[in-house]
Amino acid sequence: MNEFLIVFALAIGLGWPLGRYLAAVMRGAPMRVDRLFGWIEKPIYKLIGTDPSRGMTWRGYAKAFALSNLVLGPIVWVQFMTQAWLPLNPDGIPNMRWDLALHTMVSFLTNTNQQHYSGQAQLSYLSQVVGIVGLQVVTPMMGLAMVVATLRALFGGRQEMERAVADAAHAGHAAEHVDRDVGNYWADVVRATFRFMLPLCLVWSLLLTSQGVPATLAGGPTVAPLDVSAEVKEQKIPLGPVAPMVAIKQLGTNGGGWYGPNSSVPLENPTPFSNLLETLAIILIPV
Image 1 (cartoon, rainbow, N blue to C red):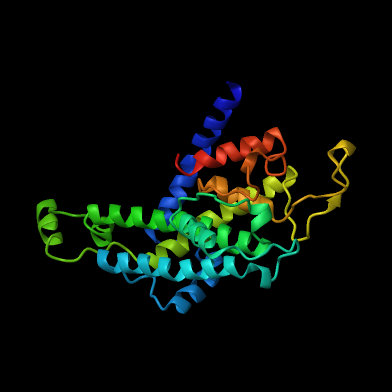
Image 2: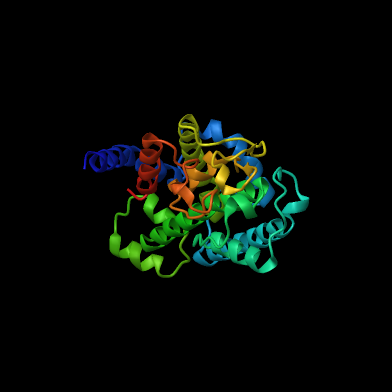
């Protein structure tokens, strides 16, 4: 019971300031951290070819959302099917079958996170870190962007929310005759990813690593089993950059851990404090 109360107290205590910070990030107003994150975001906007200050109608926002899915999906699908020929594969994991790769890509792209594979045996480090973790980071922020855009539309558009409305009836009447500015999809996703989700994942990754969750690019060691009667001469211990995946898996309320059984494996969840961190992470952002 005490552990239950501690988790909820921490979630409420941390959720309030995080919620205020996230609201400021999604509002797009000038922030003190603009100088810190601006050098990362500006090249991305230039690469995408978008002006973050330029709003979109709901149609433009929806098209941008669909385009991002159409671009990310095939890239991750191909990566899974060619992972044996790509770097960061110290354990020699073979290519994934096209149908399983397609199912895995669609599952994580839609944030469904259904796991029909065992990560430590069927995905290379590159596929885990870039394919799975990449989608686990981006897709919750894509969903958040869509929710925020919907709220903006319901409240009359971004411009209506930013100015004081003297005549509510007149403003409501005018909003029906113009396309409402629901924000910039690319700016919403980029800002939420780099200013909110990734820093939070970094903190959680470091805390989990301090508890013994693996965070390495080296191949797993081969050891001799203690039980001689098992008639197994050696066993491979799968390692890898596990902590970053566990962090975003929990914070983004995602499925798909590094290991097949997820956080029931001691390597993903080795101590009582790591268990508290992972439990807290699941409810932190929703709170």
